[in-house]
Amino acid sequence: MDIKSMKNYLYWLYCQFELITCSYLMEPWEKLLFYTFNITMLVMLLYTAYIFVPVHVSMAFQFFLHLFGNQHENTVSVVK
Amino acid sequence: RQGSGKKMEDTFSILYFQKNGISNGTLYKKTFIEHFEQAPMYVAVLTFLGFGVGTVFGYLRDFMRAWGLEKRNVATEREQQKDFVPLYQDFENFYTRNLYMRIRDNWNRPICSVPGPQFDLMERVTDDYNWTFRFTGRTIKNVINMGSYNYLGFAETDVNALKTVTIELQKYGTGICSTRQEMGTLDKHIELEKLVANFLGVEDAMVFGMGFATNSMNIPALVGKGCLILSDELNHTSLVLGARLSGATIRIFKHNNMQSLEKLLRDAIIYGQPRSRRAWRKIIILVEGIYSMEGSIVRLPEIVSLKKKYKAYLYLDEAHSIGAVGATGRGVVEYFGMSPDDVDVLMGTFTKSFGAAGGYIAGRKDLVDFLRTHSHSAVYATSMCPPVAEQIIRAMKCLMGLDGTTQGLQRVRQLGKNTRYFRRRLHEMGFIIYGNDDSPVVPLLLYMPGKIGAFARRMLEKNIGVVVVGFPATPITESRARFCVSAAHTREMLNTVLNALDELGDFLQLKYSRYSKSSHPELYEETRLELED
Image (spheres, each protein chain N blue to C red):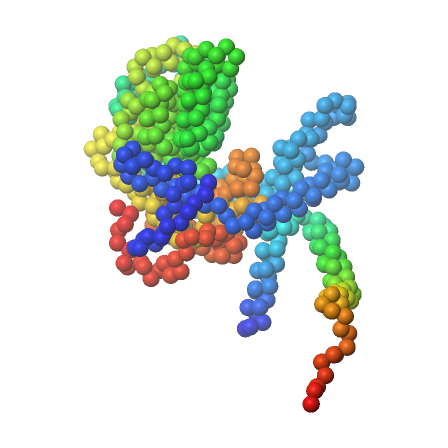
């Protein structure tokens, strides 16, 4: 039953998307065009994020580390 | 139009006070509560998004039509006229071609029975996305009617009720074939005019065959060049047309906003006419009793006090409010407890509450005598036909109690109860409703263009007929569904409609109101003492 309510919920979300973006009013070929465009944009966005976000995050992290004093190594040593 | 909330201890809803219209304590005898709640910001953003997508696809379709990739169903210029000034390039035509056509099946639906509380619809389908329709031959029966202006329920086919109308039909026939000034004044018209004057409590009245024409043909007779018309922002097209035809100067004040009106009046008196600085020959204020798109009631006491102070005239169009508000159905003048002598020109129509057609203008005897000679309608338009006049006579007699029963008063009371119940339940459910708590016109805001079509179609599937309104009649982002409550609706019908609205409101996410949310209204059923009375 959980699967059924999940499917209903997803269908309802799809209906909301259709209503908000006016694709409820479109003819089938227009809908195809619109969804193709949207999905293409989404896939490109996700792919770009996947490639570039980790590199940028690590570069930003290193930049801030450099900003707060030139310590690349661990200078805290254990004093007995 | 902002509202600020203020919780009260023992009521289910929250009172809103309009920022620019705190009611003057001494002028209003009862509280004047109007709601114009603004939707949350994300709703406006999503509405614009929806219109943006619609516009982009509109341009795409126009491109395809212009380059011959798609069959042209629209009106276009002929080949020989291609070099002339283009006819169909403005926004109105663009909107009609690309957005209105997609949801056109929700308007102009042919009905095939009397528009009472329930009616029959002819079923029609479209094969090519609303460019053409065809009738399947089936009728959809007993659709609950939430769109007709049948406020007192006089649109009925009961043989006993229509007995006098049948007699008059057989006596006079249907045609008049003349104008009022030639040979079109019947004894029925005299009787009706006396009755209307008696009903409203004025000296005399004159009736016309068409409600729209009453406004558009009589305002030019009353004002002319050198006069000033101060008209409300949201006045009906008939008033606007009449004002433009008259040739007077027109100035617009914000809807129901007395500060704006007073400023215009002061400027008019101080500065006079534009170039010559002479005094205006006449200053007339055009307002309506109930505005049919907003459901708001005019602030009559304040307007009357303003008009007395600045010596202006008042023209009150009671098309929707005559019969529908007031303790005995005599309109907004009675609703506010004022005397009809305060309003110079009382205008109204018989289309809405009386189940007939036509309009009237009432007031002092010299005003009406002037109109009998100078109105364009009296000179050129055919007068009201006798069976229709008799229908108005019998409805008005019923309303005044002259037929010996209390049926008229019961209808008015039933309308008031239905109105208050309907509005209260809708507020509790969380919809955004505009207008005064006592007006039988209930606009429910939909906002997004996609939801307009979905709402109307789904309500028809549930056997309820509603009227949805979109761009040219309302601002582009505030599309709405307009319900007209009737005295003929029973509590069961209203409950059916409310349950359907509840379900649909959850499915389409229409419950935008941030204020009144009663989570378990059904628990209050028993303890809800008759607050409606």
